[in-house]
Image 1 (cartoon, rainbow, N blue to C red):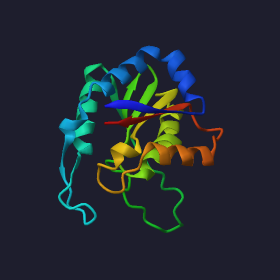
Image 2 (image 1 turned 45 degrees about the horizontal axis):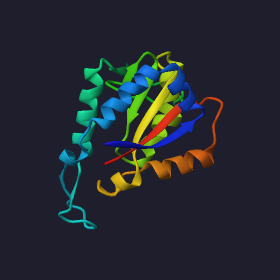
Image 3 (image 1 turned 90 degrees about the horizontal axis):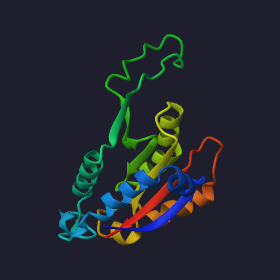
Image 4 (image 1 turned 90 degrees about the vertical axis):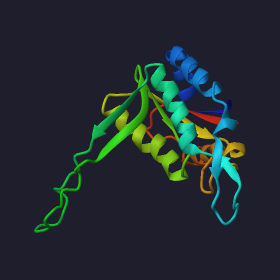
Length: 189
């Protein structure tokens, strides 16, 4: 796997490269050590590409996870206790937060990592909501979002978003005063 895209959201590149150089080295080592071809194992059942052999996001995620956990990065899961006081008077609130949680893929020294080989909405959620939440809870100061570039996404299931699309939207959205610094990395085979 190659890292071919670098987008600095809210100054993320500067913060990662200056304050988290050791951790960033580990991120690059993990990603560039992956042989993407061995993850081209998923046979498409989609109408637009029947029988085509695609990259398996599950398999790629597993190898990436093994790499991070092997270098002592930790997953962080927090329980969600959803508020019920906002319901209308008389509404009997169900137990909606039972078992609910949010999870950051990997954290080390207050640097949070999210890997997203899925739908577009999750990329936006990771950077514009989840990383801010984990920052507000005191777990991270800065984040890295790892996403496929178009070249890789084209050989995955339909609907997988990609770096170029994500960067365009972030640039058009702009930075809010609650956003934390995030480095977006685009990966290719």
